[in-house]
Length: 220
Length: 223
Image (tube, rainbow over all chains, first blue to last red):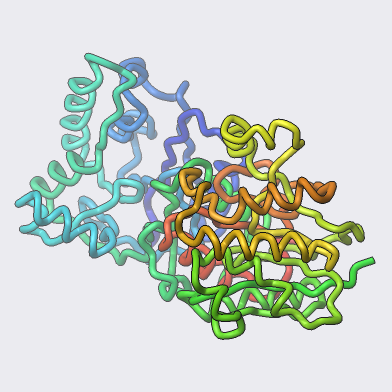
């Protein structure tokens, strides 16, 4: 099946626009799809009042109305190799690293049931999941009203909502490899590498190094 | 003048293939074979205290004819060929400014110095050996009861700065020579060496492994 999705990257006040551009260009070079980059000014009025962590909930509001599938990718994910074909399913995501899934499963029954968990930095959602995002919006506004600077961890609610609403089609962890948990032996097969939760500017420095060393080169 | 011996201290490296790659990449870029120092190459006393103090014994493990050594930690990736480094007793790169400020607030000595260097990368000439010998006796006498231990991650670095900066005028190199992965964004675009201090262990080795699989021993790919 051809890649009939719109890649979308939410880039709110990115500290290094050259990295934003590079990641988008690399994605396009590898997957043949131009990335739709969303900046703060593209967001609807009601979204501007919520903490940036919650803006994922507004994804369907910032894409053209004829878009049937969105591929969401965080700004700190480096595409290394082409993505596999994405099945035409309501919601497709990559399994988080096993240890993290196990930790979540011990605390939350819905995760224990599915025995899987996705990192919110990468997923593909079909338009028939839009109602889930509307629920997320309500949650995000509710959480942001008392204090717009109070960030939230959207990953857990989005997992709860999606996993209790549709059957997720799972892609391998290689599609969204979390660098902080990756084993060195994994590197030859990594499709996209996610530099989240690294201390200070480490994520941006590593990405800038890759930008200057790797540029738009293809990997074997 | 560029006659130096590159030396990497690698005591119990968790990933020998990464250690070997760093040495190979350095050699490919700079045309100099790296002396990799393992635990068994060090005198027993060097392994008594904290591992980071082992660099005090560096002059004991290099051949006697070596006049200059370029030292670098095992979590530093050579990215580009190093330019010439002047023939001075000691050359190093300023550490992150916030760290130097912290040292200044704690130790009056650092108020007089221009910078403090990160102990992960330096060029030392043989005439600095007495400073290293002093560091050895400091390491042995204090052992784990380190007066600098409350400076997180400082280990040997603060006494090394004390000893070398009070004896020699350190030649300061640009940050591109030794780019710190948690702070030096601007410099990272043209870095010669990239250091991963304090990076969580898995992220450090997986990123280095990734760079290994991408770069191998080739120079920059996108030129």
